[in-house]
Image (tube, rainbow, N blue to C red; front, side, top):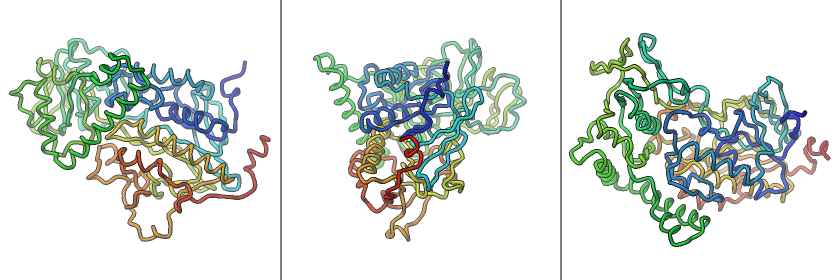
Length: 506
C-alpha cells in the first residue's frame, strides 16, 4: 500500500509550509483564486492545527474574537472567545469542505530550502516520520509555519532551579499526568497564557499565586456578542451575521487602538473600571494590575466573563509583582526577600522566536541570513525570489492578515502568469538608496519580550510603507488590496524558457 508521501506529487506550483491557521487559510485561497495551480502542504505534526494542536494546557483558548480570528469565508457560530477544541473543529470543517486534506503531507519535517535561479525553482528537502528523506520542488514557496518554536519554549535560567524539590512545568510542554489537586501552585508570567491557565486550575488547587515581573492590561467582559445574538434572533442568515459582526468588531478595535495612542490615560481608567466590576470597587489596582506602558504597546489580554479576576476575588488566586531572586528548595524567593512556597511552579514565560521555522535557506548556494534582508511589508524579503511569509497581527486577529495575504499572493501569482514571468523578487528602488535601515519593529510601536530578545534575527525594515510591517490592519486592509504589482519594488524574470521541472512534467 502506498504511503501518503508516495501518493503526493513531488513537484507543485506552490508549496505551503504548515497546516496551522495560516496554512489552511492559504490553501483555501489557492483553491479559490488560483484554481488551475497545483499545491501541497508540508506539515511537521501528525495533524493540522499548529498552535491549537501544540498547546495542551488547561483552559487553552483564543484571546482574539472568533468573528475576526475565524476566516472571512467561513462563518463563525458560537461564543466570541473559543476553546482550542472548538477552533480545531472549525479548522477541520474548512479542510473537509474544501477537500484540503488531499493536499497535506503530515509528519514531514523540512530540513532545507534551496532556490535555483537557473531553474526558477525551489527544492525542499524533508524527512518523514519514519526517517526517510523526500525531495519536493515548487515554483513558489508560501511560508505559513508561524513565528515561534513549538518544541523549545522560553524559560529563563533562574538561579537555583535544580534546588526546587517540586515540579516545574512550562505550559507549552504540559504533561498529561500532572496532578494539581490540593497543590500550592505558582504561575510565573503575566500574559494571556497565565491568564488562561490560572482560572482553569484554581478550583482544584490549594492556592495559586500569580508571580509577575510586570503587570499586563486585561480586558474583562462577558463572552458573548450581543449584536450577533440579536441578528440571529431576528432571523438573519449566518454568512450575513458573520460579515456584519466581523465589520463591527474590526471597527471597534480600530477605534480602541487609536484611542490608546490619543488618550491612553482615559483608556487605562476604563480598563480599570471594567476590572473592578469583577474584582470589587475597593480593589487596589496598584501595583499588580497597573502596567508601566500604555495600553496596546503589548497585547491586551481578554478575560471572558472576567474569569481570572473572579478567582482573585474568591481568594483562590493571589498576585505578587516582583522579580525572582532565586528558586529555593520550597519555592521561589523574590528580590524583595519574600519566599513563596509551592508544590508546582508553572513558567508561563513565553515563546522563543523562530524565524522562518529556523529552516536553512539558500539562494543559488548562498546561505540566507534573514537579518541581512529587508522586508517588503512583512510579506517578502529582498534577495529571496518567489517566497512569501505569513506574519499576522498582534493588535488585531492574526487571521485577518492570512486573508489579506491570500489575496496578495494569489494576485501576484496570477499577475506573473499574465506576464509570462517565472520569478519575482522584492528589490529596493533607486529612490530607496539612502533610506535608513532599521530593526524589524519599532520598540515604541510594539515590544513583547520574545520579539525584543531576538530582534537581531529578524529581517530589517526601512522608513517607507513598502519596507515595513506596521502591524496596523486598519491601514493594510486598504493598502494591500491596492498594491500595484507593476510597481518598482517588484522585479520579474520574463525569460521565455519554462522552468525545467515544468518542462519535465510536460
